[in-house]
Image (cartoon, rainbow, N blue to C red; front, side):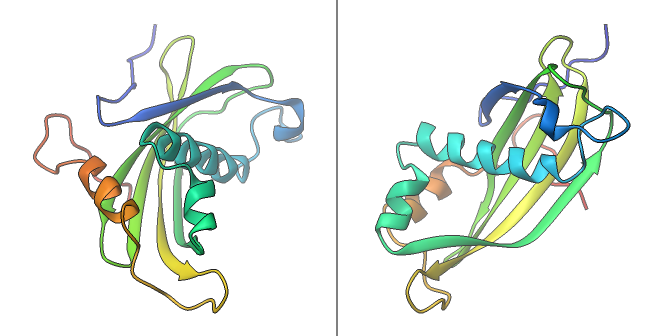
Length: 156
């Protein structure tokens, strides 16, 4: 069995199986799919924090992706069970960064790591705004402390 790459307690997991449509001609998950999975991870983390993305949007705010990074480690295949572990990495007045670890459910094998940075934008004007409460304080409270055991910064 391979080394277990499941992260610690400040992470939340979204679990699902690789769909056939998510694979490429080589039979592995297409590289762009990981960004869709990251979105699923963000949504699940927000739900677990008690503030679903839907509520943020109802408040007139959208979190626009301004940077996305993915480091591919191993390929996943059709029908393989995967876990997308997500945590809040950093929160600032108008922005936030999420980190991700994608692992194979069966053996904990690391498939990919990544991060996305977002800016809070007014849904009507499209201009950056301060992340409103209670979202900012909730996200900040969930942010991973950099001094915690096993802390790993997002991939560069």
